[in-house]
Every structure is written in C-alpha cells, then in structure tokens.
Image (cartoon, rainbow, N blue to C red; front, side, top):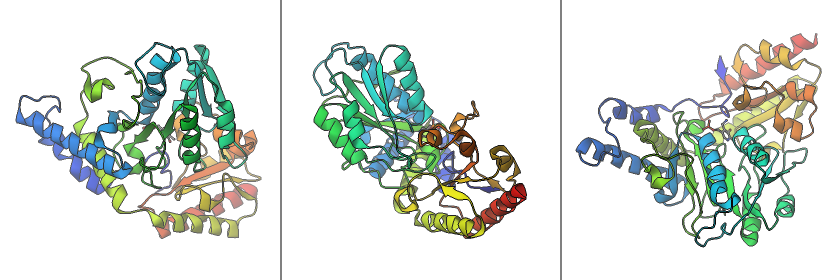
Length: 389
Ligand code: PMP
C-alpha cells in the first residue's frame, strides 16, 4: 500500500531514528538529574535539540517549551492564557494583561484541538467568535479585525490548514493583533518543514508545532512562547516539578526530543520541492483521465506544496474510500476519527455533506516517488470508473 496520508502523520526519517536510538539504550539519563553525568548528557542533548528547533524557526532556543504534541501545545496556549487573561486575575504589566478580558477569536477551519477548546470556553461563559471562511477556505483578515473587541485577549489562526492546505495571511493578521493589543496564537503544525516559518518575520506570540508531521517521532511537540516583548501571562495546564520554565512539568522524553531536533535539522537543509512537482502531476493526470473532479481549497500554487484535496462527483463517498486498496489517503481529517462526521473544513467552505464524504485528501512527503504517484492515479481511476459503471 502506498502511503499518501502525510498530513495525518509521516514516516520517521532514518537520520532521525539513528539520532534517537542511543537515548533509549545507553544515554537513558533523566535530563533533570543534574547530580551525575548521565543526567548531564541527557540535558545537553535536550538543549542541542532546542537549538536545532530554534534554528529552523529562527527564534532563540529559550522560547521553546516542549509538550507531548500540538494538541497539548494548542491547549496550553489557549487555556494557559485563559487562566489569567480570560478569568481576569490581575497580573503585572504586559500587552495581554488587564482584568476581565473574556473574548476569544478563532475561525471555522482550525483543528479540533483549537475548536473544541473554543467550545469549552464558550460553555464556561467566554465570548467566542468563530470567523467563517470563503469557499476556498480563505480567512479575511478584515473579519478577524471586526471580531476583535475591547474584551478580546487572544486570536488563534493556523498557518496552514491540514485538509485543504490553505496558507493563511498570518503577517496581516499579526499586524492587526499588534495594533489592537491582542495576543496571536498560531497552529503551525502543517506548515513546519513545508513552507518557511520564520519567527523574526511572523508577528505571532505563541506557535504550536509537532514533530511527527515532518518525519520526527510521535508524542513530542512544542509551544513557542515569544519572549522579546511584554511577558505573556501563561499558566501551566498541570502542576509538578516545574520543568520547562514552570510551563510544562514532567520528565522530558529525551529520545523523542532528540528526534524532534534531528527532524528540524533535516527540514532546514532540504526543502521538499519535489512534492510540488509530484502533487501537480497527480492532479493533472487525474483530471486527464476522469470527468467530474473538483478541487477543494485554493489554487494549487497558493496552498501547501504537498496537499491535494478534491471531490469526486457521482460516486458514493463510503464506497470510494473502502474501494481504494492500494493507497492510504484520507477522506477528511484523520484527527477526528472518533466521530466519522464529514469534514468540518469542507462543510465550512460550503461543500455539501454528501460531496464532503466523496472527497479525497492526499498528503505527499519527501519520500513520495513518481512511481507511487503513477500507481495512485491508476488506482483512483480504476475505482472511480468501477463505481460509476
Ligand atoms: N493541529 C493540526 C493542524 C494538525 O494537523 C494536528 C494533527 N492532526 C494537530 C494540531 C494535533 O497534533 P498532535 O498530533 O501533535 O497532537
């Protein structure tokens, strides 16, 4: 089976695995055990990874707070701020501070680890605005601006969407947030390793990323907390030993963190340009063979280089997915498999429920080959023709 579901997760790169292995077998010290050399070497490995991540994102290593992944990073960013800013506990100075700010602004195509947090905040009495998107899944910065009110403490907008690959205008949204004195959180999970993510240029205050989306291991990610401006009033989600500058207690998963750093190193030296060429070839060949395919999301040149998402007319969505035996693709977001609902992103774009179900998401990786794309084309063509016959 050919793996083309790289928005869900990616294969661990051999270089990454190689870097991690010694930290399972020989260098198994606790990075917080400062009293002996095992701990010292583990701590050094963690700090080296922090530097590698900082280099990829063009930010100081001290801004990086390790978490278990982006779900946790997104929760920490939004709920961690909520404790002080939304609940209005007065704190000392800073842009987001001031009491009783109870409004949060996000948008309809975020990942559930942002949208479900928004729903919870709403149940708790926070004024939540979910800004809509247009039919190409684009967010209008003006609508974000209009949604901000004097009570708003935080805006959250993803850099790139995990289903249709839209790249959001974060520079403009960031400028608006700064002008209005509101903090900006950005889920950059799908962007890191695919398009440049440069924190010297990107005016965001908090940024989430996850190693397993770019050939690192599962179970590790980070929240980047900007520290070159007023202090961001974050509180940890849980209490413990005070690791990670008191923002994320818990013994650091040294092998995973080493792998995360190695994946960043890999991502910075080879831009996966080939993905774009293969993705474009996939779409051209499918269109040449089949009628009734419609692209979901923005034009290919304006989206993530490894993303393709389209709807197949005149086929049953479930039959389509269950008949594709040779390729691993997704019909929506794998992140919400607990509820087999049609994709909330496609629905927000105005795609009907049944057409949403008959949609396919392809995610290519640096390992995808031309031969695999040819097999994928043949498989989709075979299945669609059979179902339409
Ligand atoms: N945000 C986006 C945009 C994602 O695609 C994902 C993973 N599906 C997440 C957050 C969650 O990341 P993690 O798996 O590291 O919790």
